[in-house]
Length: 184
Image 1 (cartoon, rainbow, N blue to C red):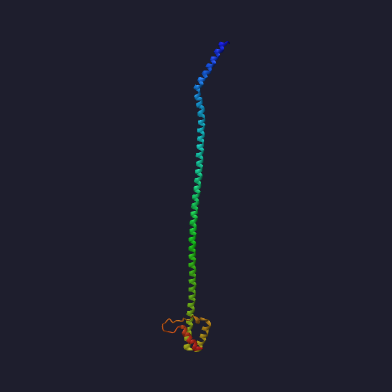
Image 2: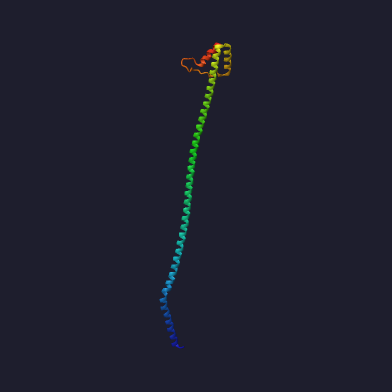
């Protein structure tokens, strides 16, 4: 191989070198474009994944806040229910106190009526004794004296009315005092 051959080899290699250079220049933009589009695709994919993660996170946060809101609402309803029950309880306690006061007053009234009834019964008995004594005074002083002594022992003398039912007449207590003074 002579110098010609080497010259011919050289131009070929230079042509080959030029050809690839020209071809690589033509091919460079697609390769460069591939290299450029791959990071953009990865970047877009990462952004998409991040967006999805953010959507999922916001969904779960919304669910949690919704659950917290429901819990708060139910808690408020329970507290309102408890407040209503407390107010009802206070109202019922007030009504119970009023009923107990009414019962106490009625019991006092009943006791007073029973006492008054007992006093009226004793007054009726005392008036009956006085009637018997007056009849005995008309018939027998001995029997009248005996009835006066029994009447004094019974303790009913205090139950004789101090005022007369008939206006202008002596009261039963005054009539008895006169009879007692006459017999003793």
